[in-house]
Amino acid sequence: MELALVVLISVSLLGVVYVSIRGRATAIATAEDFEAQVKQVNLEALQNLMSSPDEAFLKETLSAADYREVEKARIRALLEYVAAISWNAVLFMRAAHVLQQHRSADVVAAAALISKEALELRVLSLTAELLLTLRLVVPVARIAPRGLGQVYGSLRQQVAEAWKLSAFSAQHSLDTLST
Image (cartoon, rainbow, N blue to C red; front, side, top):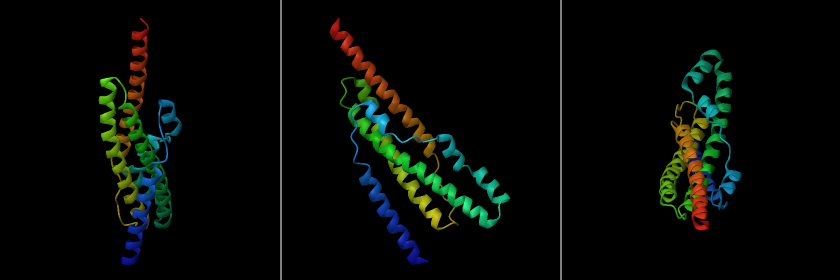
């Protein structure tokens, strides 16, 4: 049992290193670059997979063996969503870096907030990946990431608004120069 736990922790740490390195490969210069690289996350489906009442219902209605198989499938699906969120957190940080170069103080301020929150989201998503992986291996563990969907949804909206503000500010600057 101890060997399995050591192997699990080692594999998880290697996974974290891999995900961290993988996140450095993509450049973002515009809102279009950003949108082309964002992985879609269905927040409603994510919330359903993390729902305690749904899990309790499945546990009550399925046999122990069937429940374990369904639980593993739900955890794997959650891992896919969390990996997409983790990837997107890196993109949010890159977008914030680009937006921090903008002339508008409002855009720069929004970018600073996005950068901070994207880093927090990245740490939260990597922690969630570790916890979910542990839950796959040790079925007794009732650990699950909480709040990840809300944080992600809010940050995704902030990034979209910052890109719009950036485009508006740039257009306003051009209009001012031409008059």
